[in-house]
Length: 67
Image: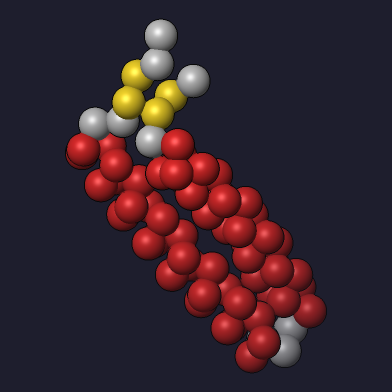
């Protein structure tokens, strides 16, 4: 049986997607400005995981249903 996302769930996903995009933008921008290698690595790891999270959220929004 296929269940579709409710409107409030879709809106919540949009809110999360917007937040994750903001975090990714900030991590990417700050990593270019950072001088400390450890901080650069942390920001790069955060950007990589943020990208994966954004891709997963986009899949949820594109399909708009549970499997």
